Each structure stands twice: as C-alpha cells, then as structure tokens.
Length: 301
Image (cartoon, rainbow, N blue to C red; front, side, top):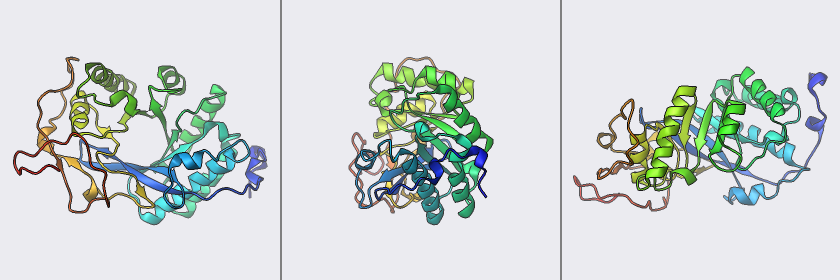
C-alpha cells in the first residue's frame, strides 16, 4: 500500500517513454587493482549514444525517464551479476517529493536482491539546481536509506566548490577537462594534487573520470589518486559488465604508493610503464594514445 502523505501525483502518471537501455563502465581502485564499481550509462536500444536519448527528454517525460532509468539500471545490474557498487545518474529537478520518488528505486532493489548500500546516485552533467534546500532534502532522504551521493563533473559547469560546501556529497568525480594531459601540464597536475589533499581532509572520496592515456594514469597516481574511470581501463560495455580480467591494469612496479605529502613540483617525468593486457578484452577496443613500448617484451600494447 502506498503512503498518500508522500504522493505528489507524478508517481501515478502514465507516460509513454522512448526505448532505451544501459551500458556499464567500470570504476577501478588502483591501490588494490580491483573494480570498485560500475556506472550505468544510458544508451539507445541498438547502442545509440547517450546524447541521442537525453535529447528526447522534456518537462513532460523528465520524471518518468528518471524513474525508469533507476529501475532499468538496477534490474540489469542484478541480472548481469554485477559486483561492487552501482552508480546511477539522476536528475535532481525530476525529484518532486523525495520520499515518494524513491519508492520505485526501493522496490526495484528489493525485487532484485540488490543491497541499498551498494547504490550511488550521481548528479548528471550540466544539471542546474533550482532549489538548493530541496536538493539537500533529497540527499538526506538518500542517506537515510544508505545510498551514497556523487557530485559529477566536478570543476565544470554547475559542479564547483560552492556546491561541494552546500551539498556535502560522499564522492566527487573530477571531469576529464581538468585532467587531460596532466602528465604534461603542471597546472592541471597541481589542481589534482590539491584536490586529493582537500577531499582527504573532508572525508570525501575522489574519482577521476576520462582517463585515456598511460601518462595520465602515472601522473594521477603520483598525485595520490586512487579511483579512476576512463577508456584507458575499459570502454562502456553495452548491456554487459566488464570483468576484472578485461581491465588494462598498469604494471604495478611503475606505480609506487604516493607519499603522504608531496610538493607540487609538477607531474612525474621519464617513467616507463605499460599496461598489463589480459587475454580477454572488450571486443574491438579503440586504440589508446600515448602507450609506451614495454622494454621487457618489445611489444607496444
């Protein structure tokens, strides 16, 4: 039986949605060389881009799409046997009454035996917040159920220090725009290293997105980054999850533990490192840029 006290009426609206499905991209833990979780990314039914799906959202279907994405991500992750955490993008402006709007998520998790403590909800790209107090109420309700909340695309658009202070998320995800070529750019490297220190002091988990080159991996690890996501490790898998054996793990020897404190003297120079390639990789991987020849084998991954 539904609780009418928390029913805003939207939950009963029947909206015919366009077809869509999910791809899953792993988030890796370099300290333990394991997959920490997967982010569910919306796709068209034949693998069409997220943009082609998101372009169909309007005020009339925003709520229904947000609800359907949550349910589909949980159902598919459970069916695929996903281990670790599941990150789901959500639209804060599509949540009208937090206690009402969370009911389908709770029901989907219960029906599929998916622990609520494994769910992380991410603010989606370029999502402005019309009512900060309302958004804080959403986060409080999510925390009450054991969910984690991530601030996506940190440092770009609406996601910045002011929102970090205001909303106090559990996780921030650093956008590629800030880390691209951080192994060659002292400014970008310094920003990342400073954010590592800041998030450590605040007790916030830092994840870096959009990692594409081995040089970026080396520099980020040198700056103290533990959690990463990007094409270097694995592309999103269409209606599938990526196994640990399919991840392009860097050679551990080239990634010594970062010191407790490090002067911001710039990115590391001259490191030679190649990824370990598994025999079972994702089909037709896109060639990665900037990989160095392994001096031990003479093979360029």
